[in-house]
Image (cartoon, rainbow, N blue to C red):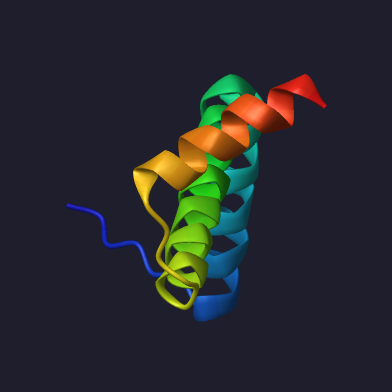
Length: 71
């Protein structure tokens, strides 16, 4: 069996090329994945922000929605 050796620089170059080609060939998949990740980050940030705000009742929220939609 033939032994192949790669130095670190060549290995990094090959990995970058492989990743770049994969991103080009599977744009839709990576676009959807990135969108999902950003949405999750947004949800996490909203939850963290909500933990530091005043608690309100469900009634108050529904009142805001009802009256807010009429103005």
